[in-house]
Length: 141
Image (tube, rainbow, N blue to C red; front, side):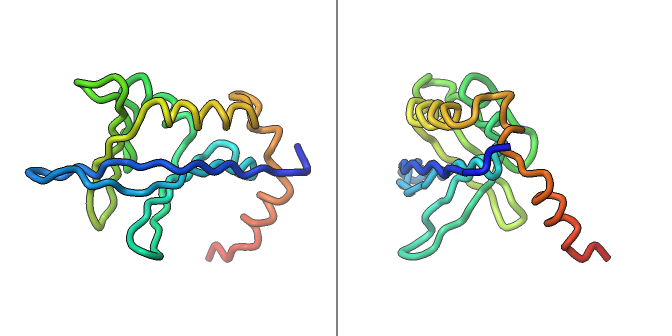
């Protein structure tokens, strides 16, 4: 386990897609923190001060750059008509949103995360004692 941690941040603009309306640009902050080396966070700007965070597998993002990936609340796939675009679908009890994002920007972000924690070596960043302590400190009853 590594004692230090690193947080990587990258900003992007995703296009929110809706039927019969022009795409709406949405500011997104992509984050990767070696304290949770298997996950990435996409924080979507919802107004002047609001953000909504979606946390999903780094592998899901990588897989979605090349083929359909995900079968739950997060689905990612290359756009059918443009290989330089990735479609990201998010579903929750409160709604559904579909975005288009630059495949190159996402690939560059992933490459930077791999520079920090290479695929297959994420476990080197996990502090098992801390993770167990957090699990055991929660009241499970």
